[in-house]
Length: 104
Image 1 (cartoon, one colour):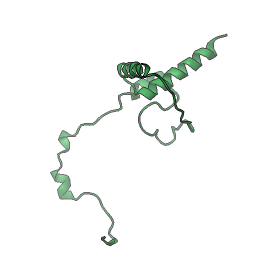
Image 2 (image 1 turned 90 degrees about the vertical axis):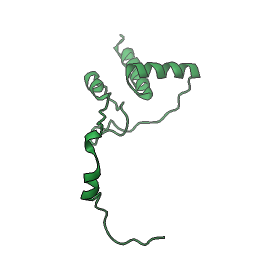
Image 3 (image 1 turned 90 degrees about the horizontal axis):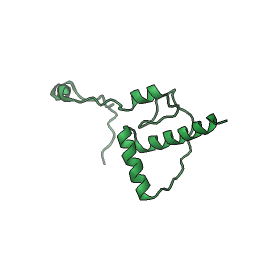
Image 4 (image 1 turned 135 degrees about the vertical axis):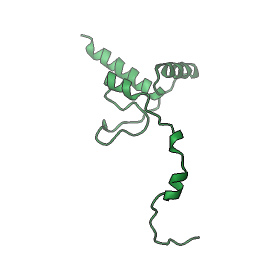
């Protein structure tokens, strides 16, 4: 086992940074960001943790059971819509709730 030397890690050296080719790096944008901004969904439906200050509060994980055929259909529909499966489920539940509250 090695002993700690007390040196702080400073990141890559200048020489190694020069060797890296940043021209070929691809920047991947969040494909859902524009859609979420346009639709104004109030819960976090994208991948990963929301940015600091934009959290929507605590969420409660629940288990939902559907037949395999239903899951396959949901996965296809979510992919066609361009959103993650669980985001599609959250959006469907919210639409169902909003539809119920709009009825007289």
